[in-house]
Length: 272
Image (cartoon, one colour):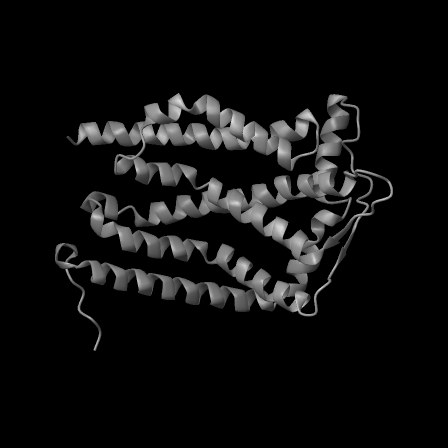
């Protein structure tokens, strides 16, 4: 017999933990299901997507080269070769990479459902009017996440690959990257970028519960600019065009977070 759903005011701490447990179970099941679906297109995932940035003809390299020519920018912006090889050095390396890559892709594809489960978990603590915004929350949060994933893949990853491939302390040293290291960099860049683009949503909830204010974000804006510029300098080649390309979207996300925090504060004052 199914467990009868209790009113949120009647739920104990253990009841909330039980709901959280089932949230994790259902979310994990969906991620595994998505990972199984990814298995059937794994050749495309690896050959075209994951190893795409290793090709000098990758769309991002061509785009920046064309832009540089139109702007009359000189220098080594155009990528003509990526002098490195990717190798596997562990007995079960490729098997482990295959499994975890499928799971990572499953997490990305199943992210909207994970958001829906998260919304169901926190919705009892919201006002009835706010609970009706589940579809909007899942939609906009998913859009932001996927935009972040695309930004990470098409901007941060190729710039990082180009930088580490062409950087050398000496001509004696040849770049032979480990497979796990290469794919780990891609997963980190893509997932981290996707989650960073969720910042406006996170700020929305933090402002709702009073942990963050718009004035606080404005006060530390100058520090955030410095941090963003440092991150952009680390993940991009040493040229201004690449650094600005990475920094501007991140700064826009931060400004959007300030705007959202201001709207939440105005609504809280309006509703008393």
